[in-house]
Amino acid sequence: MAHKKSSGVGGAGRDSRSKRLGVKKFGSEWVQPGHIIIRQRGTRIHPGRNVGMGKDHTIFSKIEGFVKFEHMRGGRKKVSVYPSSSRVST
Image (cartoon, rainbow, N blue to C red; front, side):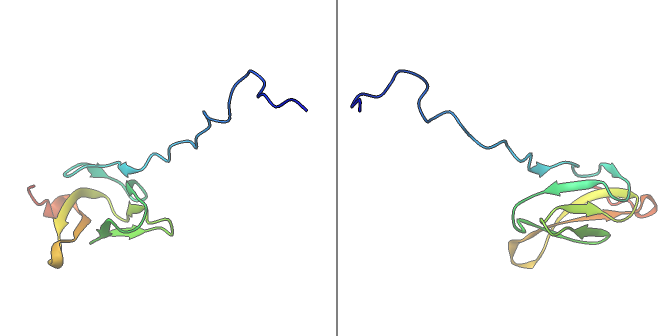
């Protein structure tokens, strides 16, 4: 048996594909039902009004309207969607 490594590519260089996490729709952007607003790991941002959360913590819109990022008590962040008739300035 040879005690020297053969020349060639080493074991490094493999990596998993990125998961494309992050904010997909920003504040005061128009969304329709089913649009993904945030893809995240864990609840960094919590769901607010008119949004739902998937089992992988993806936050999506339930209604047609405008996205608004808000603060909860305790310093947590949440995201809501408000219909166009009650548009809140950001």
